Image 1: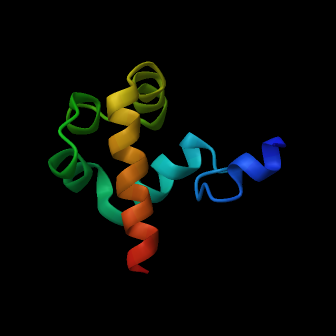
Image 2: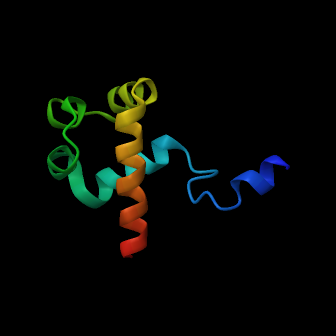
Amino acid sequence: MSELEKNKNNPLHGIKLKDILEALVKHYGWKKLGKIIDIRCFMFDPTINSSLKFLRKTPWARTKVEELYLAMIDAK
């Protein structure tokens, strides 16, 4: 099975984590995002770079962010 066939049903394929995070921040804002997903880097002095660093090292947090992003785009 080719790489393309494996990822054709993955809605996140080809979308960068940075783009996902920026879309969520634009849609919800840092304050609401921190209430939806209880992550300190969203609540205290949040920045894209610090959040990306944390999300790349923390699989459970990245999964929550990706799930929220999918729910957000499905709701549109």
